Image (cartoon, rainbow, N blue to C red; front, side):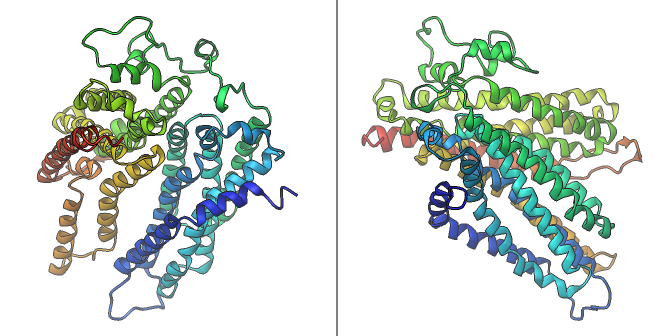
Length: 554
């Protein structure tokens, strides 16, 4: 009965699909996809349909790679709070005590969370069908791509559901989900593009190997999630899992965080056993010692280990074997910080509202600036230390003689990572001040950062992929116009890293050309970002001082 008439599925579908954001997201998604096809559609006055169209093939590849990347970002946002959200709402115990079987709960949560994403992806089919008349792409390739895409969505949702069952907070579940999905995203994109010239093999692998792997891995994680609901860990008051920090320290597998030793105490200090100093900031001290790690260090250990597992091969290839691609490793560091920074900062003020303690905070004698920098530094300190583990290979790369000759570029890369991490934390804190829910502040932070950082690169890549080739005057002018589009990303650290000039370097395949880059774009990025940081901090302080403290609106 419950398997057919699933109350969890019905409730989740009603609350998710009837929300206004569902229709708004569908509208924005369809408009964006239609704009991509419109920009990239061939403008030849006469199209020869008797030959395969390279433009159509590039358009379809770009179309599906973009959808795959979007699915990897959206699936955790829909699913990572499926179980942890029940814990945050204090309804976890009631869910465990219900007569529903664990598989019914897990399947209902998963289907309801992914239904909206599946509708979005399926809605793009009529748009991509417009590319079929151009030739070079068959209907079977399109259907196979959708089979692989839907299989990947199921896998991403299963990963997020699995993480959601292990953490009390959605923020922790979300960042671990992204760290697990990021390697899959990289492997999927590289495999799809590298097999573009082997259409038959790519078609066969997409409809056989990819679905089997995704389904097997996904169902295994869902089985573990259902078993965790059937045999839950010790549950204390209000559905909070009991975490013995000393016992966790003894049973930790792999990386062990020594909270009383350097450098672990930089981001996971031990609990305070003495009184604070007279000149200490109580907000910062409370956030660092009590709030962030009251539920143990499992999330930190997983994030560090998983990110380093991916960073080691990337470092070996991009910084030593092919140092002319060093900016790509910087991109990996920046993407990691984009995922990590909002987790530790987006709940700085919204968590006070959710606990109904903001009014108490505003009535203290602590100044607005002390509150702001205490909250900001507590969250930024954790995200930056985690990011610095990945930045260390940039300094280690000076051992490579080819990169040592480009020490200015390497220092610029480090500076870009530092400035970007500060902006990410300040933006998340600003949105946490404006909004009322931590989940909303975190998701809007991700949306704004992706819009500022990734959209200009996508636009540039779209125009560059379909720019005319040749040595004619018109082709050169068209390519020059495409290069000018790079300045749309003046606020993007990814674009700034890619635009940093480098001298000629030697790699395993021979000598590579020098990367010309654009110093004005790099300098403009630092100017724009530092100005934005100052403005956001000023507005944030003003909101605390004028809007709430003087009016009493918490």
